[in-house]
Amino acid sequence: MNIVVIGAQWGDEGKGKIVDYLAEGAQIVIRFSGGANAGHTIQADGKTYKLHLIPSGIVHPDKISILGTGMVIDPQALFDELDALEKQGISWQGRLWISDRAHLVLPSYKALDKAMEARRARPLGTTGRGIGVSYAMKAQRDGLRLADLYGSIYETLSAEDRAFLEPYRARLKELTIDLPTFMAGNKSKRKLFEGAQGVLLDLDLGTYPFVSSGSSAAAGASLGSGVGPKELDKIYGVFKAYSTRVGNGPFPSEFTPERDGNLGEVIRELGREYGVTTGRPRRCGYLDLVALRYACVTNSIDALVLTHPDIYDGFDEVKVCVAYEIDSERTEVFPSSADDLEKARPVLKSFPGWKSSLTECRRFEDIPNRARDYMSFIEEYTGTPIHIVSVGPGRDQTFFQQEPWTSQ
Ligand code: GDP
Ligand code: IMO
Ligand code: MG
Image (cartoon, rainbow, N blue to C red; front, side, top):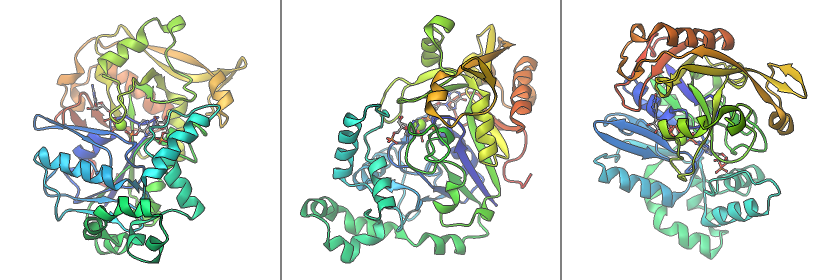
């Protein structure tokens, strides 16, 4: 049985926490997209782990972690992260492997990423980790894969690139595997596919050009992990009770001071909405159901995972965006054009707040009726059930309505 976990918004939905939770029932966890632009947080056993490249299964001592083909890997960031994990008491030797078809990020890519961003008429707000350049090099067929570090392609690299790579070559060789062969040999195991970023940052489905460059959508789990699409048994879309976005680009339901007063700052402080990778304050807004339904439909999301509803615990009312107004026309269709998305004004629907602490809930039955009404509306609007709820950052603050490792 295989489960895919993707972000259903603009990233930072709590994927790391949910993958850590689901990893309990998995044997292998595979990260299938993105690079060190991601920041996945796990709080467990009194410690906080901030992962960028390493799959969120690593915190469980008996799980195998794989960096998949769809990733772009900066070797320096990789070994720095592994060293940091070791300092936190996580041993990874013998249970962490990397697809030899994954691409590498070189220092020159990071420099170019920043230089191109500086030249853009409309900057994207990239993390500057060389991600876009690495995926562009891959598509251009000038990229460098881990498999290419030991043959004729390596010889064609500049002296500078070789000097950078030399200290990592032997260490990487010990970690690389032929992922399709590995996956074929582990067909019967329970595998968990971990996405990075979110559907709205996906290169094909997201708010282009204000996107990242990997395939963060569910379909990316197949190509990015060396398995066919029929191997993906269940797809979970993780979403927050509100929306956030780091970096630039359209955000129709973003809080505005004129309409919403200081709601943006209040949510940012309550939710500690600051980027894990860059420390940048995240932009905050209402839960956007137009965008969430789009994510459900385009990714065959079987069930949703709700995170951060606890942030609304003290609120008198909780609003969600149910449609956009674009040039005075109401629509529930998620537009393809960044210009239309910029123009879109959210049509809001209000729910009475539940005014009680969800953080103590440990079962679906513990959720107060008002919060359940709010959740039922989301399920109805998106046509997708909510199977898992997270009510705080801790591992124990997660529970399910439907047992995850079953085919329903
Ligand atoms: P990811 O990129 O999707 O893995 O998410 P991040 O780690 O970037 O951001 C999510 C943040 O919210 C982290 O600091 C988590 O510890 C925290 N978090 C996750 N789930 C919940 C939740 O249900 N409630 C609250 N209050 N915080 C949560
Ligand atoms: P996780 O996995 C939120 C955003 C950047 C920028 C855009 C392009 O933690 O959810 P890039 O460096 O990829 O060229 O940046 O994408 N971005 C993310 N935002 N969460 C992420 O990852 C992100 N990864 C990239 O802020 O707007
Ligand atoms: Mg994150």
